[in-house]
Amino acid sequence: MDLFDVYSIWDVELVKAEGCYLYDSNGNKYLDLYGGHAVISIGHSHPKFVKSVRKQLKQLAFFTNSVINRQQQILAQKFGEISGYDNYSLFMCNSGAEANENALKLASFKTQKKKVLAFKDAFHGRTSGVVAVTDVPQYSSPYNYTDNVTFIPLNDVEQTEKELKSGKYCAVIIEGIQGVGGVKIPTDDFLHSLSSLCKLYDTTLILDEIQSGCGRTGKYFYHQYSGIKPDLITVAKGIGNGFPMAGVFISPEFKAVKGSLGTTFGGAHLASTAGIAVIEVMMEENLMENAVTTGDFLMKELSSFSQIKELRGKGLMIAIEMPEPVFEMRRKLLFDYKIFTGASSTNIIRLLPPLCITEYEAQYFIDAFKKVLTNVSLK
Ligand SMILES: Cc1ncc(COP(=O)(O)O)c(C=O)c1O
Image 1 (spheres, protein in one colour):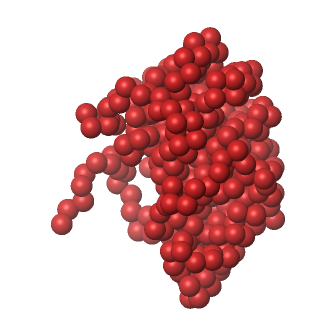
Image 2: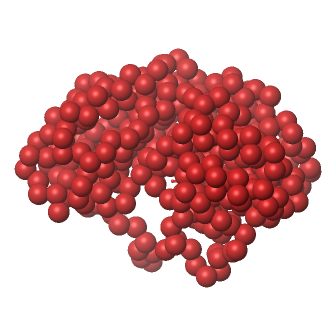
Image 3: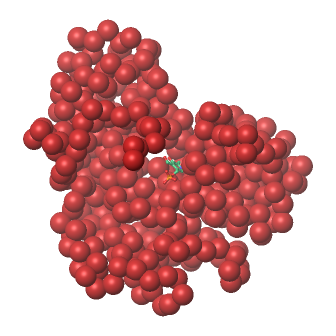
């Protein structure tokens, strides 16, 4: 059987990883500045993570959500501690798309309404419900089309109010920082207005922190810089450091109704153990503080390059927007300097390194970036 050929891939076969480094089948070592789309938070194959998962695997890997799961309870408690949302409750599932699906369902159950307000350039996942609130038309099939969704520009308070005052919206869904859309950041003022308008018009505010959460920007969630408290927050990617898992943080205003949500695998023993290990390592190694210091270092160094059209970011979520396509730069960074980077659209290099990246590793990237800029015609 062949693989269904839907991914553009680099000609690299990875066989091993450790910390911020990856190793290929030819013995080459690469610096990981992408973390496989922001998934690697505490570093590849962290010894504590490996030890916990291995121990749990020997003991009990899985049983469904029909029995008491102590690991999942501990995970909920630890999420409360690290995020400050200790009065919210937790629903565990398996992927970011599924977390957003469940959040939208909860919003619709609660308000008994069905329209959703989303933002231009938003990305919330690939399954039917959430691809409909994702602003990338080529990801949607005719089956996914719905007229329940309206897209408006990010940071536009007037348009937001104009829509919400119709009283028809069950939810507004917004990323903490737009990732796939190119690290576009909602302003604090906009988030405050959005939060007030949602309350005024009985609309659930869903913060998708799947990419911008898990400490990547220096706070556990990016929206915490503004001080707002959303009704629902979705998490995935970094919370499992490579173990596929996701969740929804649910405000006390929502009543749990038996059978209303469910999943076979979500939050099972092995997944929850992985999640607990990630939180413990983040706290023990002060990784949120490191996201700020190393992120600030990268931003300061990058700001000296006059060739960059625009630099955006917070902590270790950074977009380097160039005036022209960046494919050749990324190819050279990967094959000549052994550095993995990400992209957003054709002209943006996106950096989402593991949160344990050091200043030395950041400097290595800056030096390589400088060399690539001087000998690459951007086209
Ligand atoms: C902001 C955001 N939401 C949702 C998703 C979807 O997550 P998953 O691929 O785990 O379904 C992503 C993935 O890139 C994302 O960046």
